[in-house]
Length: 377
Image (cartoon, rainbow, N blue to C red):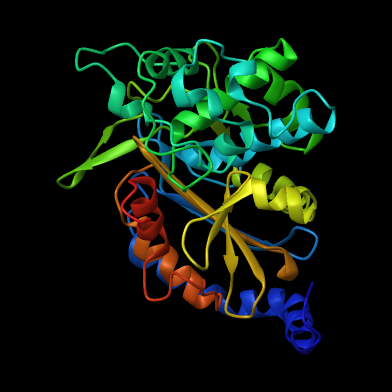
């Protein structure tokens, strides 16, 4: 509920966001040219919408594929990496709404091979990173050369039942949990996760050109990932962890993401309205930031609720910020995995007059990077 004294400010920003963003366009252009000056390199797509998905700013820089010299635009499909997690959470909410699973349901209902304290883990624990489950990256054999899939992740943790802590007692970011969630979707629906997402969920939320990675299928308008070595970029599109789906396999474009962004947030907020349910479905990252449903949640400098997440994988770095009260969505997708995205996105937030309580004075992308590495607790 918005405090009455803050309502005029919220309404002012709801009304003035398009005007404000349009006034910032020359500065955004200047920042883009400063941080991504070479159109022949892999690059980025910056896309900003407000008020009923009204386009405020759209600019791509660089190439989606250096081999074909295809330019990046708002229809280019980037690998989302961990930005994908909100879509896996959406699938779980969809099945919950159909009474096909419960948030407090034990994961052993789906994976009876889990033992010890793993038997205490619930679906809610997986969603909000309070399972204590070991990161599968730490269990990959040194001689592993074949790409892992989500079922392989289950196999890895089934042979190691040690948890970091008792489920539900702490927050610790875990890709493993979201791989298990995608397997739960498959068990409940009887469909492959990628088929369920593409044929049902993405159609429902008007992400018609989005998909989940499957190495047997082609991806239209695909950006390929690159890694910078000295002054050159080398193709770095896949690693042994690039074929898992629930934790990071979504490919989408700026246009598709923005078509669904605010409706997804409204869906998240409806789930979190119930105070009892909300307590179990979100976890505290610090005293100002929570995590729920595949998203970090905090307050901006005008006391508006703000949702955000980033994604990091070989060849790709992405970050998204959404402020429902301002009907504002900002996305920056990149097919290069250097850290140029961090100062650039900080500049974008500054130009859009956005600060996040609990992360003051820090780079948002780098702060999230520390959370993923479990260097912030």
